[in-house]
Amino acid sequence: MAGHDIIVIGTSAGGVEALIRLLPQIPADIPAALFVVMHMPAQNPGLLPTILGRYTALSVKPVINDETIKPGHLYVAPPDYHMLIEDYKVQLIRGPKENRHRPAIDPLFRSAALVYGPRVIGIVLTGSLDDGTAGLFTIKKRGGITIVQDPAEALFPSMPLNAAENVQIDYTVSLDEMGLLLAKLARQTAPTAQNFPITAEMAKEGRTMELDMDTLEDDNKIGVPSVFSCPECHGVLWELHDEELVRYRCRVGHAFSPESMLAEQTEALETALWMALKTLEESASLSHRMAARAEERNQHNLARRFADRERDAQTRARTIREVLVKSETSVELEDTDAFNMPPDAPAEAS
Image 1 (cartoon, rainbow, N blue to C red):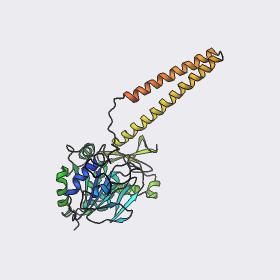
Image 2: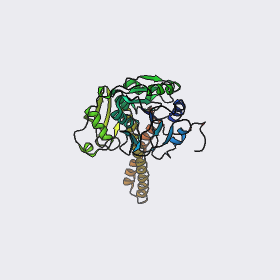
Image 3: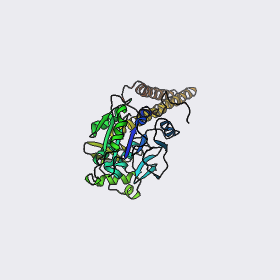
Image 4: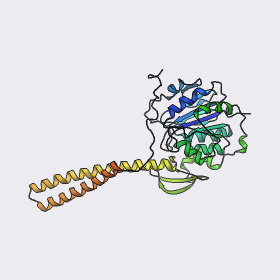
C-alpha cells in the first residue's frame, strides 16, 4: 500500500525565509517526492533551486519537462511555467496565468490531487491573497491531507488564513513542527483512492490546465457565465462553485479567486487612471498652445474657447491626480520582491 508520498507546497511573499526554515528538518530518506511553487516574476533568474539546495539534504535541481518523479527529491517550479504532476512525471506548461501568476499554486495542487488522490499532502505557507485555497480544496476532496503554516508566525498570513477559512484543514502547525510531521505522515498508509472519486468537473478542469484543445474549444464550460469579464483577456468569466468556495475561469483558461480578481481590477483601474491623466495633461498643453496661437492672430473668441478647454482639462487632471496620489483604499498587493535572498544566505550562488 502506498503512503503519502506526494508532498506539494505553495508559498509566495516571505516564501524563501519559510522554506529555508522548513527544509532542514526533512530527512533525506523521506519516502516521498516534494514539489514547491513560489510566486515569482517571469524575468526571475531561477536561482531558487540553488538557494534551497544549501538548506536541505534532499536532492534539489531545476525541473526538466517530463522528468520522472523520485522520492527524496525536491522539484521547484521554474519562472514563467506552471508545474503539473502526471503519472510519475513532472510537466512544465506555459499555460494561462492563474490568480495572476505563472507559476501558480492551484495548478500544481489540482494536478497532484487528480493523479494521486489520498496520497497527496498539500501545504500552504506564507503569502498574500489566496492562491492555493482552491487547489487545497481539491486535495481534500480527493482524500489528501491538508496543512497550513500557523498564520500567527507567517510573514504574510493571508494565504494560510484564506485556506483555513475555506478548506477543512487537518494540521495548522509552525514551521518548526512541520518537518517531523511530514516525515511521519509520509510513512503512513494512504486511504484507497476509490473512496474519493474524481468528479466530471475535476476531470474537465484538469484537461483545461493541460491545454487539451478539445476541452478548450468546447462551448460547454464548467460553471455558469458571470457578469464579469476576464481582467487578462476581457472574455467572459464562468463562475465556479466548490461548495461555498467561489472562483472564476475564462474560456482560454485564465483563472481567478475573488481576491485575485479584485487585485487585478485594482491594478487595471490604476493603469487606466494614469493613462487618463496623461491624456488630459497633453490636452491642456495643446489647448494652451492653440489659445496662444489664436491670440497671435487676434482670434480672441477662439482663444477663449481653447483657454476654457485648457482649464477644464487641468481641473479634471487635478482631480485624477488627487485620487491616484491620495487614495486611502487599502488593497493587499503581492510582494513582487518575495524572491529576495534572506540576509543570512550566501552572497553568491554556488
